[in-house]
Image (spheres, rainbow, N blue to C red):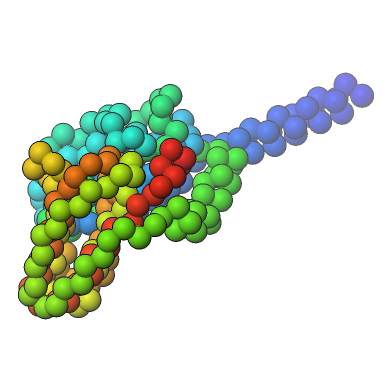
Length: 234
């Protein structure tokens, strides 16, 4: 009887350990040209790591941001990186939801975020992936939109009352599309130098007055601002 109880206990412990075994899981991947700020992502594990790759060897700076835009951590500080670069850090209190400000190669870069999580956290991560885009779209309200022809440019001043907003710049064909956002003090928050068809996305985590400019060579473009009027929730 003792032997049977011992075997049952060993099986139970083994299953419990297996169920809670942590492993590295890809959370999200971001790509861009120049400087951007990402959407918020959940941090669910004990540790996280980042993988940065770029098209050329160049300096890069990456900051981890809180939901209000405050810097939680200087992940990388203008290091000249031999691509690819990988490093890992512990997740600490206050990191439940974070975004990243990435200043990378203007010729193109990619950042992959991974977390060291168990199966329960993995399931929560799966649910977030499944529902994230739909939830984001429910919160957003169209604030402004500009359309430009080939080799057309614009510079507009906008006032944003929401504490969180998104800007999308769409290049309709191969060509150079440049856009940037400056705050009221003239400090550049995001900038992009896209060289191929597609859409660049950036998030701003502060309200106020901004200057938004966009120019192109060889491609029509759209520039859209959507605001999140429920910015106190994630």
